[in-house]
Image (cartoon, rainbow, N blue to C red; front, top):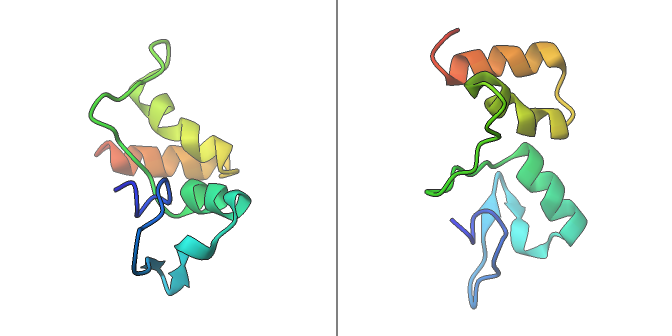
Amino acid sequence: MSLLGGLEQPTSGSIQVNGEEITRLSDHELTGYRAHDVGFVFQSYNLVPNLTAAENVMLPMEFAGRSKQERKLRSARALGRG
């Protein structure tokens, strides 16, 4: 998962996602890749305690620049409410 998320570099070979070689991306490009193309749910997840489940799901999408309407729709679908 760390390799797919661009958190670590492989010792050999390459990693292609949607036809793009992610091991050649700059740190800035990797940040964009993580914001728009992949997501992680770690075993020891850290939710924001004063937010609802939907608000916690929507939070990364806000950082990624998604509209409020899209965030609500996608979080409802992800939580089985839409």
